Picture 1 (cartoon, helix red, strand yellow):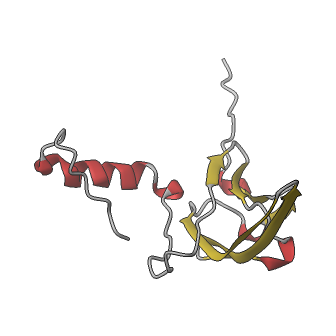
Picture 2 (spheres, rainbow, N blue to C red):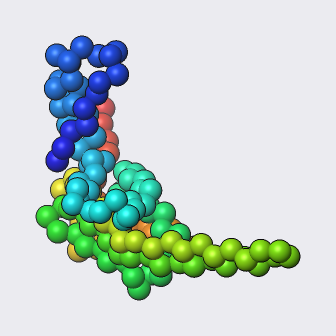
Picture 3 (cartoon, rainbow, N blue to C red):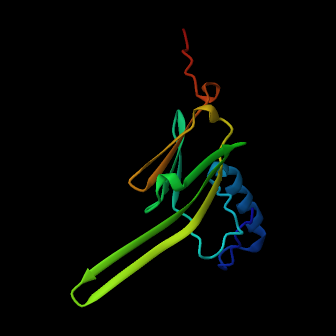
Length: 149
């Protein structure tokens, strides 16, 4: 994975490796492992990754993408979302006709913590938003222990 370079002049370059390492360790589940070989015409949908008490939730904005054109896989804690969108909008008004076309393949990949239960992962698409739910395994959920006096 390529680490972005900071050249804003605000940070001395000696701090960059430490800061990058901190971000990678602290936000490891949120780091995207996008394929860098994609062409400039392809697009990357906006994605939110959220950890809740009992599950991980990944939501991707996929406007104009038919659910049958979406492929979701989870292998070795790596969640991959890929697909293709083809959309055409036409507008006709007095004096003009406009057609816009949007198309392109997308590919997003995320490393999730190994505390998820891959056997119970689910995905659904509703109004252009893909939601993937990965429950946490029972052994990784916190257990409240009563303190007796």
